Length: 128
Image: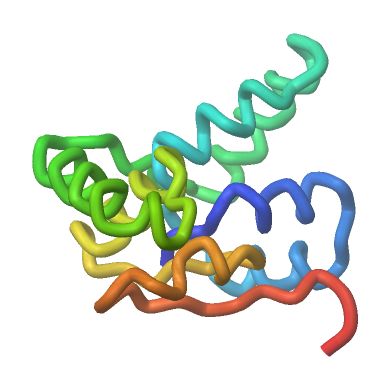
């Protein structure tokens, strides 16, 4: 399973449902795009150090972008930017999941539901 940026953010903010689902799926993977997005949200070197240590504890695999992922993401942006506002980061994350044949756990399923053959698992941080 690949876990999207938003779910990791919920976990880091202490959301019990996010903590539970992440711990149920250890080890898991994230896209390098998710890693970069999370690092860009850090407020200090100490917060970054704790985050990197947590990734190690979770035994996270960071999936790098390769030519196949780049090409697929390019096609997704061409196909879905005008109709669905497909953003670069989401296109790369979706392409990564398809490339490695993994399901994507995300709370932002609307960003991805138009991608054919992408397996989604919706995360709901509050409620059911």
